[in-house]
Structure formats: C-alpha cells, structure tokens
Amino acid sequence: MFEVRIVVPGVEIERVDCSDAEQVARAIPLTKPIGCQSIRVREVDLLPRLENASEPVDVLAALRAAGATGNDAAALAWALGAATSSAEIVVVDEEGRTLAGAVAVFCSPRGDVVSIPSVAADGGKWLTLAPATARRVARACANHV
Image 1 (cartoon, helix red, strand yellow):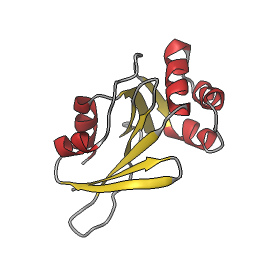
Image 2 (cartoon, rainbow, N blue to C red):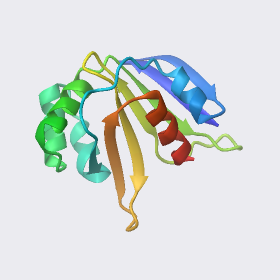
Image 3 (spheres, helix red, strand yellow):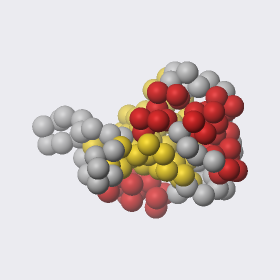
C-alpha cells in the first residue's frame, strides 16, 4: 500500500492511502511536466545542500554542487524553488511500517517534477529528478515497492 501526503508549504492538506501505483498518480494534482531532461545525482551530495535552500538560486547551487550541469539543472532548480505544493509517496507494509525511501512530486507554475530514489550496485543512493507525468509517477511508485 502507498501513503501519499500532499503539502502546500508548511501545511499538510491531504493524506491519501492508495492500493496501487496508478491510484497514486491519480491522487496527485499534476498540472504539466517541466520541459527539460532528467538529471541523476547522488542523494548524499544533494539533500544536505537542499536543507537551507529557500530560493531557486539556492536550489541551483545545490544541484550544481551535486554535479548537475546545464540548462536542465537550471530549469529543475527554478521549478523546485517555485513549488506551490508537493507530495511525498511512501510504501507502507502489511504491518503499517513505512519503508525506507520516498518518491516525491513537486508542482509549480514552471512545471511538475518527480524525484525518484534508486540504489546503485555499490549501495550508493541516487535521485533522479525528471518531468512528472502520471505514467512516470506510477512507474516510480511501482518500482519502489
């Protein structure tokens, strides 16, 4: 089962339990996917730098420090920095425990972004930041189980 928490900055506005990945995608208020390519960065290189990022320029600095380059990094930074809502999607097991990792969706006037966690063969944790479509969100959730 999936639990979706939809948040407008500072306020949880909705919590939805979903039985499958397709239902998750329908629960998120997606508008339009951001118009750029995906980027992939190491979680450990990005997340600590994002903790104090409050403006798009701060998000861009964090992405660049994590190794992201080019116009796609800038487009993603401006979308993430302008997000008007976000959704965190976690997997909940039969005993009600939340499993590690989460898929996240950020909705902004500049386009929607999905953050997809993965683990490399060496055990390193990575995040893919990509244009958020219902299909990509559903696939990310299904692969996260």
